[in-house]
Amino acid sequence: MPTATYEKIQTYTAASAQDTITFSSIPSTYTDLILISHIVPVNNGAAYLGIRFNDSASGYVFGGSYWTGGSSTTRGVYGGTDSQIEIIGNQFQSFGAFTVHSDIFDYSSTSVYKTALTHSRTVDNTSRSLATTWTSTNAISKITIKTNIAACIGSGSMFTLYGILRA
Amino acid sequence: MATFKLIQAYNLTGSANTIVFDTIPQTYTDLCLYVTTYSTRGVASVESWQIRPNNSISGTEQTRIFSYPLSSPAFNSDGGPNELYSSWSGANASNFYNNVWIYIPNYTSTSVTKCLMVDNGTDNNSSEWMVSHSSMRTNSTSAITSLTLSGVSYNFQAGSSAYLYGISNA
Figure 1 (tube, rainbow over the protein chains, first blue to last red):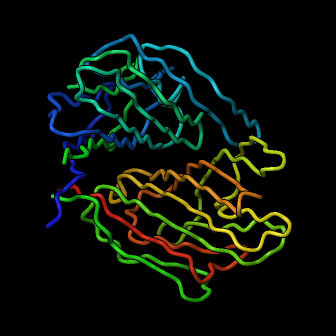
Figure 2 (figure 1 turned 180 degrees about the vertical axis):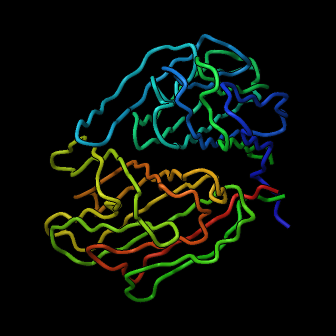
C-alpha cells in the first residue's frame, strides 16, 4: 500500500462568532502545510483578516496581485512588508462567504526563512494572490487566523490544516 | 491514512455537452476537481462552460481576473457571468487544451453558502493563451451533492477529462 502523503492534522468549525482561530502544537513531522479556510463573515466593525506564525507580528515580506470584480473593476500588483499575511482587507465582514487556500513550505526548518503562497477568493471584496516570506528561521509550531475586531468570523466557518507527509 | 482520494473520473471519447458528477459522497471535508478540455473549433471564439453546483447557477455570483492574448496581453477583472472562460481561441487556432483547477471547501455544510476557487490556463501552441483566477459563490446553504460541467458555447470534445477528488475528514 502506498505511503499516505496528504493528511489532515486538525479541523476547526466555529460554533459561534469569534476573532481568532488557532492551530497550536503543530507536529514537525511533515514537509509542508496546507491551510484551507472557508469563512462566513459577521458584520461587526471595520476589520482586516490575516495569518500569523508563532504569534509573530513582524517580518512578513510579500508580493502579489489583487483584483475586484463588478462594474468598478480594480486590479494590480503590489508588495511590501506587513505585520501579518493579510488575506482579506478592510470590511471583509460586510460580505459573503469566501475561501482561502494557503501553502506553507518547509515549515519545520530551523535554518531557512519560511515561504507561503496564499490565495484568497471573495466575490464581493478584493481577492488576492500573495507570495510571502516570513523572515524567521524558527520552525512554525503555531498558526493563527485573526481579525483586528472581535467576533467577525461567523458560526459555521471551517478551517482545516493538512500536512504533506515527509516520505 | 491517505486523504486525497479519487471519487469519479471522466475521459471523453466523443463530444458531450455536460459532464456530471452525481451522488457525491458526504464523507469528505473538501472537493478538488481537475478538468482538461479540448477544442477543435478552429475559429476565433471564446468557448465557455459553467460549473453548476447541484445543477443550478441560480443566485450564484462570480468575479475573476484574466489575461490574454499573447500578441497584446491585457490584465482585466470583472464580475462576469457564471461561466468559466475555459478556452480562448484566437484566429486560426485549431487545437488547444485548457486546464482548470477547482477547489470547494466545506461542501457538506447545510448552514453556510459555498465559495469555489477556480484557476484556469489555456494554451494553443504558444500563439494564443489565457489565464484566469476566479471565485464563485452560491447563495444556497444546501450541501453539494452533484457537480455539473455544462458547455455554453461549445461542447466538450473527445480528449477532454475531468477528475473529482475528495479530501477526507477522517
